[in-house]
Length: 103
Image 1 (cartoon, rainbow, N blue to C red):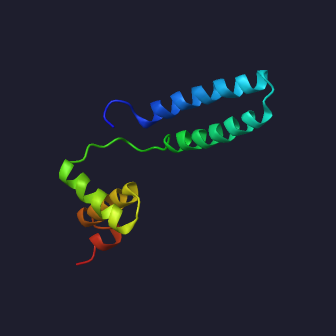
Image 2: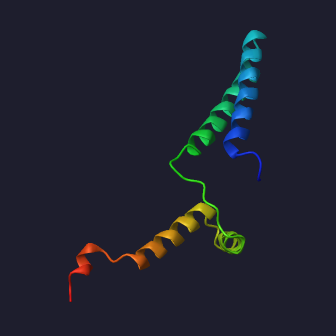
Image 3: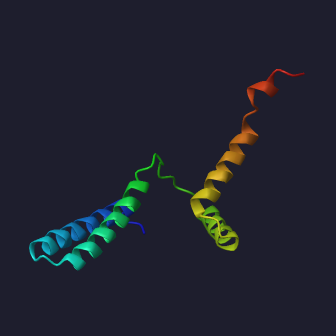
């Protein structure tokens, strides 16, 4: 999705659910209130997960396709694979301080 972020979509969904909660309270539809409350808590937890301290990063399209295919084959989430690839690359670039002095 290129135009609208996940946070915006979840925020719109939370507003719609909040309206449903208020309406079900006013009309005293308790079963509907329970459904809206569970849906709202679920979306709120997803929205909170998106607030993690992750920066949006642009990745070359060929690398994105490779990670997507590999993630589908292994069943591992895309973000976890990307994190591990960057950590492996960083490990190859920087030598730990304990190994730098030996010679």
